[in-house]
Length: 447
Ligand SMILES: Cc1ncc(COP(=O)(O)O)c(C=O)c1O
Image (tube, rainbow, N blue to C red; front, side, top):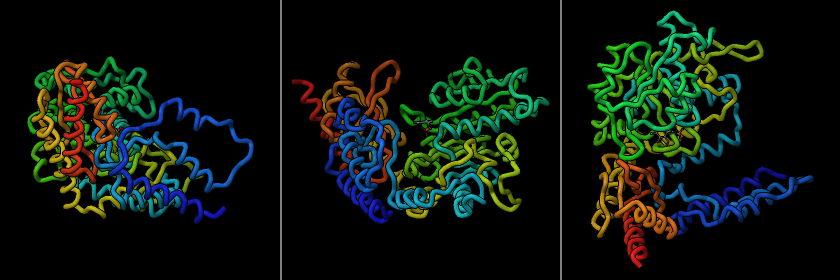
């Protein structure tokens, strides 16, 4: 079976899918039962034609693909893929490099090196920081917290890599009360313990911090896109010896826009930063970035040498910075996305998404009964329609229409509809279609 034929089939299906996104419903239409029935075949004893596998896969998945790649998807915080990043990602799979060190993929290692430099520049982070291209913001938190754990305990005379955490001085983790659940999971993974995680209003944070501490501040919270007050908090927290970590899964990208940069002012004074490529840079899943000011601590927490590996002193081996060992060469897609858009295109995309969130909020807010709980300050807005049940019902009707896709949250004790705009393709027309779908849902809901 030739690659040419199989990849040709895959390409045709993919292009048809992507070009149809604007007309197709955004919501998945196949039921759980249907999907289980279609995929749940007996384990094949014999193989089959590769092109047929691929074309059948597409048929089996039909209606089970959420339209998050398109411009009318406003759920959670999920980005699409710019074309060059998608193309680069296909090549990444074709080249199939184990991006663990330079020797296993020289171009992948160098591209990752360049991505680090470019990203620090785009995001206004200190040039001396180390970085890692990880699977997402969750693993970026873990990477940064491993570095923090190393440094805070080394400062107490404890070698955590050698001696582990049993009997170690306690590290407490503080976070403002708008932090994301991935911080809980990172605290668990790094072995710090959820009982040592303290969630506090920002005003109480500085006074509460003492001893070895990691403080997590938020650049763009999941509900409203709120930023902690970095200029005030970071110097005060650092004066108390804390390691300040920033969760900027999408909000760190405000730094790439002159208009929105002031929201993030001062975050460059932190110790570590976590963000995503698969959200607002619009590279394919899965791709996140960790940056650590104290490169030595970062490297000490992860670096490994083995006699069967091939190391050289003049190269950057990803194994020294990444929590995973064998890994996808995800730098190619990041590199391609940055080249396709350039600094100005990345800025324009930020501004377009934020404008889309604002337009949707304004448009929906003008409809009878719709309340704007939070006008978008970045690319996230919050709406409610009467009580919780009505809000949920309207959202369900919008999603069932296939015209737009929205997801919910609880904000200040009320159910709310989030409008999250994170796709390079989303435009004013998509915002208008979303508002029209909300208007129709209000009509339908009133019946
Ligand atoms: C604010 C925030 N932090 C962290 C994460 C986790 O990111 P990822 O899913 O890329 O691991 C998310 C994901 O939605 C998020 O919104």
